[in-house]
Length: 288
Image 1 (cartoon, helix red, strand yellow):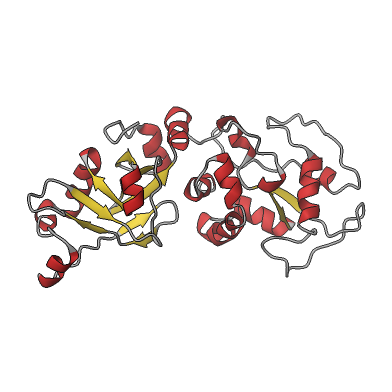
Image 2: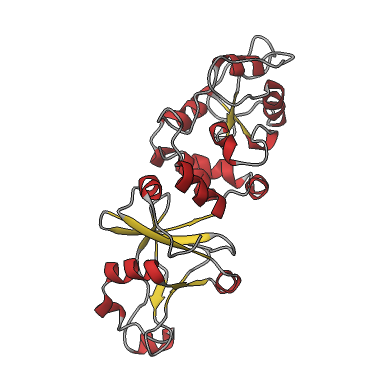
C-alpha cells in the first residue's frame, strides 16, 4: 500500500472521516522523527491549513523564529482525540517538499508502519497503523458479522467455569471463538485474584474457590482472532477484572475507559509486539 492508494469507504467509516490519506514510514523518517507530506496527504494538509499561510514557513527553526513564526500546527491524535502540535514547514527555499516534524513524546512514527491524516468535521487528525491493520479495515472493516461491536459479551458459562476449582473445557452454542477456561483461570491466579483496575472496590468470595470472584477479559478481543496468525486466547492477553471493571470496559463510553485501557496496555507491551498490533489500533477496537 502507499499514500496514493484510495482511502476507501471502509476506512472512512472506521475513522469517521470525510477524506484521508496514508503512506509507509521509511527507515530514515522513523530515525529522524519526521515525515515527508506528499501526494494525497499534502493535498489534505495544504487545503486544511491554507497554501498561502503555509508558504510563509520556509527554512529552519532559527530562520522562522527571526521572522516571528512558529511552525507548530494543531492536529488531533487518533483514537483519543488528544491534541498534538508537530511542526509543519518547507525545509527548503523552493517549497517543493513539505514535512512534519514530530515530538517523540507526542507521536513517534515507526519504520514499516503507516502514518496518515484524515479530516473529521473541522478537525484534521493524525494516525499510525500497521499494514496488517490497514488491510483488515479495507477488506473487512472492523464491525462484526452481525453489525454489532467487535467486543463480544462474555459467555456466562465461561466466567462461571473459570471460577471453579478445576476448570474444564466447555462448549457454547453462541457464535464465538473457543476459549479455554483453564488458560483464563491461570491468568486470574497469576494476578492473585485482584482486579487490575479497581482493587480497592469491594468484591465477594467465590463459593467454589474461596478466592475473590474475578472475571477474565481478553484485551485484544477474541472476535478479531481471524485477523491474527497467533492465538489471542493466551494468559498474557487476559486481564483479571472485577465484575464492575469488566462491565465498564464493555458498556461505558469510550472517553470513560481510555485511562483504564492504557493502564492495561502499558503492562502488556511484549504482547502487542508479539501479536503485531499498536496501542492505537488496540484502542480502536473499543470505540464502537
